[in-house]
Image 1 (tube, one colour):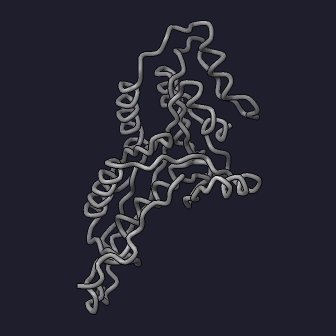
Image 2 (cartoon, helix red, strand yellow; image 1 turned 90 degrees about the horizontal axis):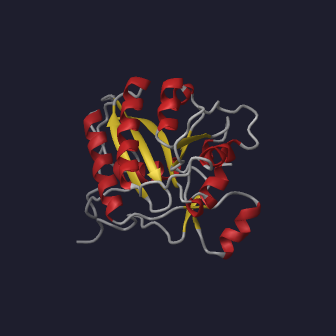
Image 3 (spheres, one colour; image 1 turned 180 degrees about the vertical axis):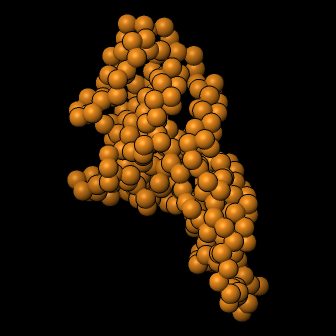
Length: 252
């Protein structure tokens, strides 16, 4: 079902977004490459001092590679749900106005529950479906107030199965952002971590890389034939490699 959303959602006129929470990230030295000049390597403090943790709320659209993030120290429902609603309202405002399809709207919704052993009860009155939202299978994502809010705005939640978080492409973009924001760095407090993630996400959105579904096993050979590049964390891949920072900071 989720693979079908990635591969056919756009052809049905639906925007596909993925949501996830990354972290916690500790304010300690992180291993990785650095920007230090040659013969002057990075030096880390010998004291093991924990400066706190931060988490990053993430919304990712694989079709164009755009990402929306928010840094926070904790992410209970009281933090996650208001942020998610604000971001989805902004996303929906950018989409074209839906055509009036009163009779066909329910069929469009039911299509995304085919094959599920446990189905969400859909309201009697449904607006035209506009967005497919991939989320992890967490209790906080299934609260009635949040699910009804999504339904009322034309958003269909698609929950990954237990042990199937690799189906969420937000896992991949989070790895990319984490590597760019923290590898080889020593943040001293959670605010510095969230600032780094915000700067990296802004730079990423200036020239985003679209992700396409790569899948596993049988799709590997097809992915190799099409010269796709796997992105860790999920079944996502890109059609061109993501640039890394190898070799920067060396020389004069």
